[in-house]
Each structure stands twice: as structure tokens, then as C-alpha cells.
Image (cartoon, rainbow, N blue to C red):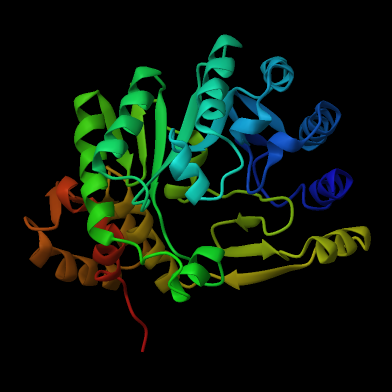
Length: 344
């Protein structure tokens, strides 16, 4: 797989116009399983075709149970300067319910090891709306996060995706359906607690202290081009999106043949408008009318006509910037959808 990643990188090295990167992100699976040798090869491959900006953010996603002392010591020596740890919860009953491999103790230990190794850019994931986690326990999850003085948090509502084990269990009545009111309550608790602690909710699911925003995520939300390497990886060049085949065997075979297997979607002006609305409204900065105007005057007129009736209740406007009110951010997707341009 590592050799295939390197070969795809060589094949697609000219996808991006700029050869200087301000973000490199190892994610989409469990990159913390990679050996030191494998990670070294990948870094060498990246630097063969690209240069890194002075402040380049290099993130590696990791499971807590992969972060032992040896692994963390290597990562501290490597070019990785930011870790994204999939904690999910600091309570064993939640982790067991979510079928996570690590324990609460391992979750806490992984943060401690990374801090001791000198990592100051650490973000963790937490999940709210879990049936085993009531509001008091959710508060304790937040308490522990705040006690660690971490600069960044990503928090997501538990969702049910078609075809997943959770969806199967709910359909067979082995577990109860998700409680949206519980998720809403815990989202509100999260907003209040982190705001009081000095964190900005700069995107619906992301909180940062002292403006330590994730460069990688911010690039997505601001519509910057990116190159994705590997099975299922997505790429974007401002005119189209493409995504690699998700089957590992098919991916490896296509790379060996020198022709990566992928699907592609050309973006229309309607696509660009709807994405600008969706991505912009997810952030605290909102959507600029000037940006919409750049897509087309008809879109700007439509956006204003659709947005103005929601000012005060769901939206707020500052100059030409439209954003979702803090108390309405749980409903961002629905509000954004109400502003989409729907083609006949």
C-alpha cells in the first residue's frame, strides 16, 4: 500500500498548480499503524515533488491505543507537528458502546505521552449524543478536556449511517433510536462551556483557543484546492472533484497499471454557489455576498432574497457577511439547505 501511495503521488504530482504546501494530513484510516520506515518513505515522497511552507501544518490522525512511548517518541522526531487523537470519550461505557478498541485510561495516557514528548498542537475528537452518556457525564468529558489545556477540539454528534452496524442494531431494536434532544442539549452545553473557557467555535464542530485554527480544515471551508492520495481519497481543483476507488484491491491494481481508478464530477455554477453557502455558513465568518456575486449576480439576488427573511431568528448580518446565530448552529445543515439553489 505504501508503495502504491508513492506511485500515485508521482503520477499526480502536477494536479496542484502550487508546489508549496501549507498542510499535509495523514488521515482517512489509521495512519498511526504505519511503521517508522513507512512514514519516512511517505515524507521522502512528498518532498520529492513538493516543498513545505515555513508554517506548514503536518497532522497525523491516531488512535489512543497506537500511541505508546516508542511511537510518540518517533513522531516527535518526525516532521509531524500536529496530532489528531480519536478519543471519542473519556468513559469506558461510552467507548464499549461505540465499539472502540481503546479504554478511557488509554485515552488519557495518550494525551499525557504526546504532551510530554513536546507536542503543543494536539486536537482530540469527542462524540456527543451517545445513549450511554447523559448530560452530567458529557459535562465530565468536557471537564477533562479543559483540564488538559489543549488548543483545539472537534466534537461531533453521533449519527447513523446506512449500512453500518449501528443502523442494523437500531432496525433490529437491539439498541434504541438516537435521541436528537439529547444531542441538542449536549451541543448547547458544549457551546456554553467552551465559550466560557475562551474557545472560539470557529466552525460548527470545531473549537480553538487563541486562534489556533486547523489549517487543513480551514482550507476545505475556504474552497482551496487539495490533492488526496490513497483509496477513497478526494481531490479538488476548484473546477471539479474526483475521488479514488474505495476498494483496496482495485486501488492497488489500478496504480500498478499506472492509471489510478477514480470518479469525477465537474462543478457547475449552481454547485459552486451551493458549496459556498454550505461551507461558509459552517464557519463563524459566514458567507460573503461579494463571494456569491463572483459566482453570478443572479445567485447574489437569490441568496439575499432567501436569507433576509431569516435575519434575526436564524441568521445575522454584518456588512455583506451572513452567518448563523450561535443558538441556531445545531441546525446549520437545514438552514443552509433553505438557501440552496435547486435546479428544475
